[in-house]
Length: 254
Image 1 (cartoon, rainbow, N blue to C red):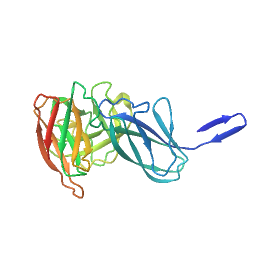
Image 2 (tube, rainbow, N blue to C red):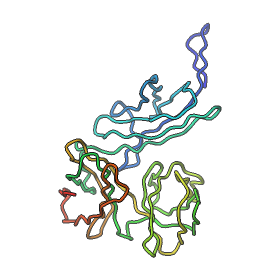
Image 3 (spheres, rainbow, N blue to C red):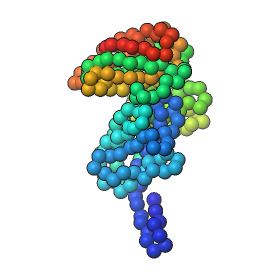
Image 4 (cartoon, helix red, strand yellow):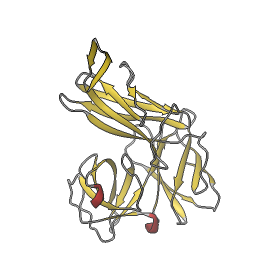
């Protein structure tokens, strides 16, 4: 990457990472000044008109990308910088309580232990994504069927087999978009058959210092949502069903 300051001065910068901020609800790029991304102790990125944030000349090593601002809560994503390779990263920004509630979305306000990780998804098979082919344990590439125009890059998903076994996975990049193939952030721990396996979009956040949290969720026509709450220092989540009442606003306590 070269940036030319004047005919007599030429600066050459090495691109380390290109970061795209995406609205977790809509999948649309977040542009303008509504949110920003940074790395503590490093110079700010170059912000492009297309919404990309370019980090240059980062020494090799591991970093934490931080993004927040406006109607979006703080998000943190791991970044590993290697020699000779520029990373492409998508950060899905989680709406905060200032986010206007779209008419087809639910707003869930809740109380939980401070710092608890909250993950909410639907078991409504009609609204779930589907596997395009069988996948084996260890696989990092997966074919997913979803409605046209849906952007799931950077999205957290819950995959569940017909026998009830399941796990979380995050989509880090699109492989062959025409074939709806995607790359995940790690190998699957089990086999999943095409027939009967469902893949559910997940909304996630962390409870604040007072134990309060706000999440938005859409696309479910079932009777309830599944909430998994994991307290700090614990590896075992507590599960709770959140009934759907027909209202766009739901309150719950975990």
